Image (tube, rainbow, N blue to C red):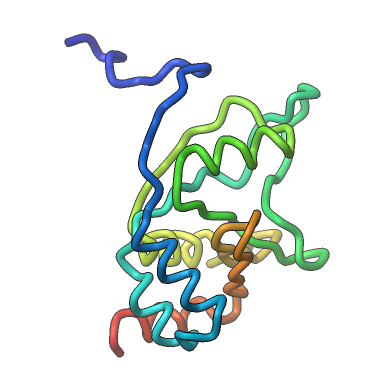
Length: 151
């Protein structure tokens, strides 16, 4: 096996099942059958797909692909399937991006680390920007992390 055998070709269509448990949790939350705290505790270990906030645009420029909230705040989008993520970034013109996957709690913790220090923009997390649009603002991430970990 060669070093790059695990890499996928850019145009390769990958058929992955959606995160059905995560989708069910989002549905319950959307319909008011689950409050925010219970939703986040249950969603903590769901596998989500995301990428780095900076990247290449199809026009050849590099830009921040966070979803803007204000001049110095935004959101990193996370998705429940690789397919949905690819469709979203295709629509906003992003090309050549890494697809990362991790439990949701790890994405929250990584985002908190990116926000520490002198980050020019503070980022929160937005779950499923196309349909459900669940937002976790940057100032709330520490509280959300403690709550998801049961502290």
